Length: 325
Image 1: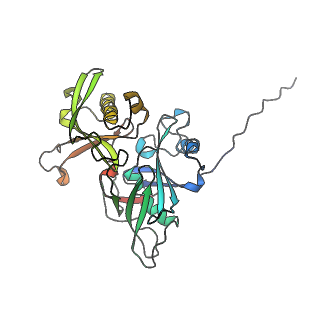
Image 2: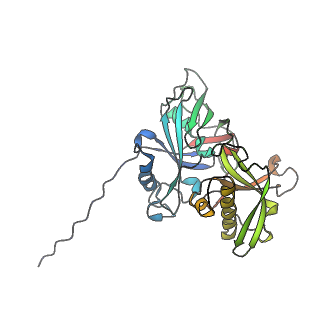
Image 3: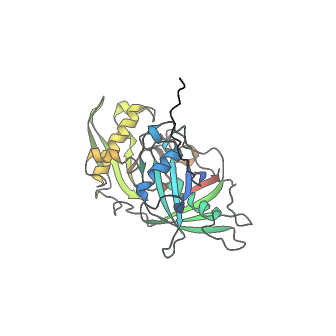
């Protein structure tokens, strides 16, 4: 007796026009707003699929994500009708190993690619013969204005090659200057949301460390940040690799406490549900002492989405090279 195989439901494939680009020390997809559903509530499905985060895949093997928070980002760009603004940009952090997206804050690295994207996609038109253009960008996550200066070739296209270098990127590229206009209070409305320029945060009953206190500055400029004096960290943590489970756990515990102090979350549990903001970084003297390598005054270890970040959040600096991929 012949057995008829059960019919397999065929999945419908969808296309999403996009540019895969490195910007600063991050990499992500740059897409037109018109190519996504009209409601942001419906963005998760296509963006999770594009990055490969469906089914909580931490490797993102089925998408273009690179298995880390700095390679799992999206910039959604559209022409603007606001006076004095060229384009509007929404940053989306696509989680790695979780079917979630976060639109709570901006990303300065990905932001640095919005100007070049706008030029190359015809969203702004340079003057004939111009060798650079200022692109005025409204970030919808923080409701702040950003102005980017993009260098151009003779034909008006983006100049990709150059000799500008930044830590975290081995190659050089064309310099992009990013100016955050009035960046204070991006999400809280205040530069120092807690009203203090420095304070102590107490983390209670942390496994293996017990209770401990650290010295921090809670600041909201371009993005909310918890800046930690690395010398105040518990002794067992000092010297730990930045990506060790202990180091990551401590950073997240401090970050969540900071979120509550800044008014970004009502409880520690609620703070743990929003991984993108506030961001956290440890600040210390250069390890070599004195001015440090390349004249550096401070050494920074940033964390992003529960992982040590080899790059640096560019909402804290204004110049970076760019190379389109």
